[in-house]
Amino acid sequence: MTLKLDKVNRGPHLSTLVASSISREIAQGRLKPGDQLPTEQALATTFGVSRNVVREAIARLRSEGRIWSQQGRGAFVADATNATVLTIDYDALQRADSFRNLFELRGILEVQAAALAAKRRTKADLTAMTNALSGMRAAPYGSVAWLRSDLEFHRTVAEATRNSYMGQFLAFVSERVRESILAAGNQQKSDDMARITLGEHERILAAIRAGDVEGAQAAMRDHLAGAALRVGLHEGEAAAESVSPQEVASPVRHSRLRKAVRNRTAG
Amino acid sequence: MTLKLDKVNRGPHLSTLVASSISREIAQGRLKPGDQLPTEQALATTFGVSRNVVREAIARLRSEGRIWSQQGRGAFVADATNATVLTIDYDALQRADSFRNLFELRGILEVQAAALAAKRRTKADLTAMTNALSGMRAAPYGSVAWLRSDLEFHRTVAEATRNSYMGQFLAFVSERVRESILAAGNQQKSDDMARITLGEHERILAAIRAGDVEGAQAAMRDHLAGAALRVGLHEGEAAAESVSPQEVASPVRHSRLRKAVRNRTAG
DNA sequence: TCTTGTCGTGTTATCATACAACCCTGATTT
DNA sequence: AAATCAGGGTTGTATGATAACACGACAAGA
Image 1: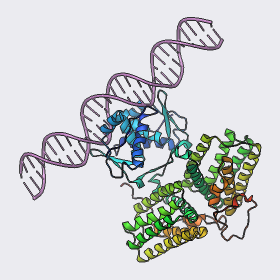
Image 2: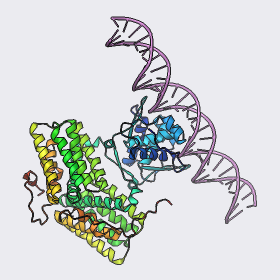
Image 3: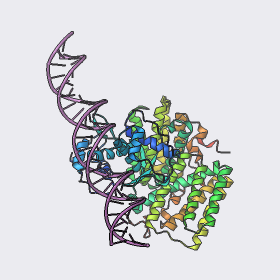
Image 4: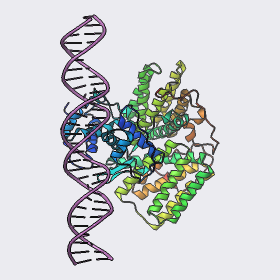
């Protein structure tokens, strides 16, 4: 077993580098589930760091469920299904196809959340949504306050599903999507957009208030399709469309991001 | 700031206990975003462990995005949105309502995954699904081999969506659900169930093969409703039912499915 | 032959200490 | 007044030692 473990170059937190290096070994299959890792001492000398650093790295991997260790035996690669946490690689999201996939997943969750919200919303939920909309109306388009109100609106919708996991997942996915959009920095602003976006939200709220399940789904789908355009995703590829139950087995038109998600990662 | 930090009782991995203790402080709001944590030395004496253990705990929390630290300054609680991982508390899942919520979320993802799979599946996908079904057919109901084939079938469906995040999320959620079911240990086995469950899977595959989006959704919904019953969830509460989109103007009534699911929508 | 108990070795878990790198503050110097 | 520097406090890393545990080898006894 010749693991390809490079000496680690200085950076932020040696343990982070060691952890991701080991993580890569696992992801790329050089370390398979059940395999025993080299001893801490061996890893320490291999990476050229202290055993302490190795232990911090291992503690991290263990908390992620990627490996497990037992005193006196050693550390072993865990089964993939044992992953106890869900992570989304930031760098991977810079790739257009990854971003589109995550956007699609978000769309699915948002649309179904809207449906559930239309069924289960309470008066308090509706008030909260209305307040969030007022916040958007009051703030200039694209401003920090506007964005906060936007997030707040979607959060209240998720909360109205009365399913905490829905809120948790949606918040997680949305935040990753938002980060990626900000990193790309290509959202276009115009005066029209404020009105359009606001209108989309209002229709969602109206449908949810009316308890109109289909309407809420459709309104949310519209909103996400609009958001996709605004972010530079072509409509045909947007999430909202792909989950709408209509045409059968249409060939997937390959997408093109406008200058969208080009990397500007470190450097 | 009087943090309620109990001395840690011996158990599996001190760093784990320290980490979850700090985590709890954050979750319960005694440590708010921006707050500075006590120094490592202080935490070490507070918990009655060595500074090394505290560092492993902090390394873990940092990797989860819950805190950030800077050399020479200290460690600080991060904003909630910065959480880079999504976790599901195992204990919380023992509560019935939490379990039902997670099951509902899983249902949403599975149903929409089936829809996407019906659109995008390749020949290879269909072959893989068929193989998984054969595996189920060959194995005794409830056996390890059977369960593995079951998981494999759902995995292939997720893969056929051509959306890696869908697979990732679904695998994560399903695994948590499965764990919880096993822990409860209340799944009932009978000879009929093998046939029924197999039939449900076959209908899903048939719809996906035919590229029938609605049919795939409906079949998957049926399957999940059945699974919910088998696991002891009341039908009315099952996930699959609550996301049913009430046939959006579809001329094609393709369901020759049992209508068990369709009674009792929210009224 | 089979079982059992002991021991030695290797590994992880934890502790303790020391030093380096860095931040912050405040006094000193220019 | 501004720049510089010294000092203490904090995290980051290194190193060595000890305890707890797993595992195989090996001998003693049945």
